[in-house]
Image (cartoon, rainbow, N blue to C red):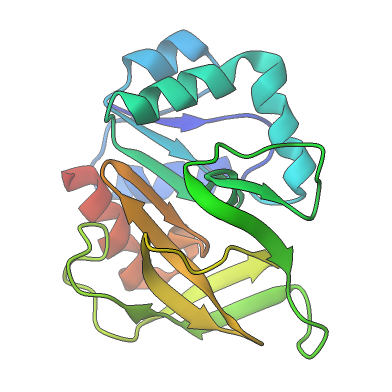
Length: 196
């Protein structure tokens, strides 16, 4: 079973529909016990980084960190991927999981923010999440803050600068774009996560 985390900041229905379309057993939950019993966890999210504070208030943060440590497959989408980093300049009072180094930062003033729409990603070889994906596919973004390129970056995009489009480390995966809104490419990525 795939558990989608409900902490009040996500387009949960779209993500659930995409996994259901692929034939996955999926549940949307804010219950720590349900998350602990799931085979895989998805942390979606849209909006302000401060909304991640709900993870601390509900006890979900500890469950999510334990899942990452226990090698349970974990996918962060958009804000969920940013949570995997140390934090964000968007809300410095809230810390991220710190699984990946660095902070998420605002796009430079040379480009329009938020970054909304289709953009290509340069895919690196060897990624399990991006297996079988064409070298430079287009995916759908909507975000004002971006994660840095790190050793775990498996796909990057250019928009005023180069930033992480996808990260991967062991059982932990993250995508800044929205696979549930990225057509066949996005569905292929979610299928790969189902098969991890």
